[in-house]
Image 1 (cartoon, rainbow, N blue to C red):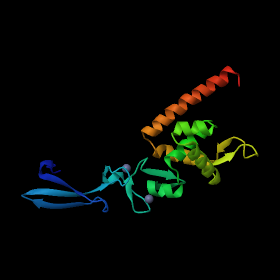
Image 2: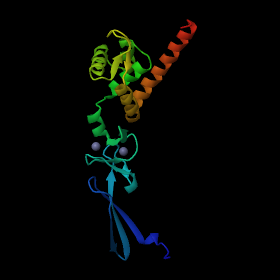
Image 3: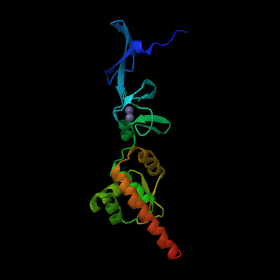
Image 4: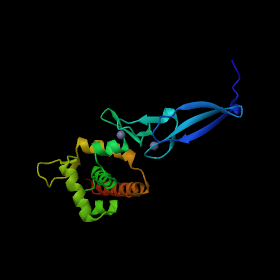
Length: 189
Ligand SMILES: [Zn+2]
Ligand SMILES: [Zn+2]
């Protein structure tokens, strides 16, 4: 087998967001020049190696791993397609996480998510109307719980939204849940 002469190969990265990473060989000054068309993830803008590219049905090229690509109902979707399929904003996710953690007070949710009381009410109403929330009892005043759609949104988007706001929110939520269960233990509930 011929010895690899890596020193003879010069790699030139040609930025291209649209073309699949291809290789072209040419020579300059006696050296082989390998031109690589670089692809960058449209979501996180990371340079993608050929084997890392996921080509979504919409034509966008993204990282083939979460959170840029999400598996949803047996399909793999880029962030844009995921948002079209199941539109959830970061604050919506916070509200869902709070409800899921057993927080029922609109005021507490607003405080944790750092949004206004009215915004919280509007999100809850919309989540309810769009079938992310339902009621455990027969009355609409019963405690809201997450429906299967709500649980799916929670699972999908907790992988997608990961930033300082959310870490802060989750830390406060955890502290609150711990205090809540302590209080329940003390009162024997
Ligand atoms: Zn990416
Ligand atoms: Zn897509």
